Amino acid sequence: RKEVEQDPGPFNVPEGATVAFNCTYSNSASQSFFWYRQDCRKEPKLLMSVYSSGNEDGRFTAQLNRASQYISLLIRDSKLSDSATYLCVVIQAGTALIFGKGTTLSVSS
Amino acid sequence: GAGVSQSPRYKVAKRGQDVALRCDPISGHVSLFWYQQALGQGPEFLTYFQNEAQLDKSGLPSDRFFAERPEGSVSTLKIQRTQQEDSAVYLCASSLEGTGDEKLFFGSGTQLSVL
Image (tube, rainbow over all chains, first blue to last red):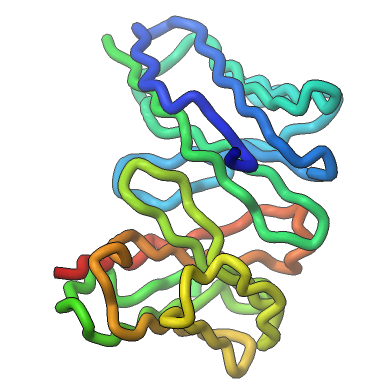
């Protein structure tokens, strides 16, 4: 079982839609959580950190559920420019970042 | 420099050839990471340096893979006797302190194709 699992998608949604991605992690000792965004043939870039209390950045909301060991990302009012692969990232103490396989989002007009 | 720089951008190697991939992290960044990303997959951890010390190399897939960062800045990932399964994008990333709770800055990667 992979340490970080994501539904690979693709998620195909129209502009303006709300879409949610989930990610599960296997190690309960995981300490820090992030969502990264990766455009086609580009490097990953940090989208947002994920906190236990939940956090919001404009149209993006991230949630962490430690009891169930999952992380979510909600995108409201999807834009064409949101089309990308979204990578769930987990850090355990003293280790490097562990990436999920990514969830592909395609927003169409 | 302004960002993490990797070279070459593309590398084509014949099976059995040795290759060396270079990473220039952001100046002053303590931590440096190497990841391997196959097509359609997320980045897979290879190895991690804090300054010149290689703290974790558990992700290196075989003893054909070797990484170094002798002066705590530039790093080189070397792959000996390349195999077709080594074909992937090799990503380098750096972070300011490497506490594990901070942003990673990635380079554009080196796309390695082994024929």
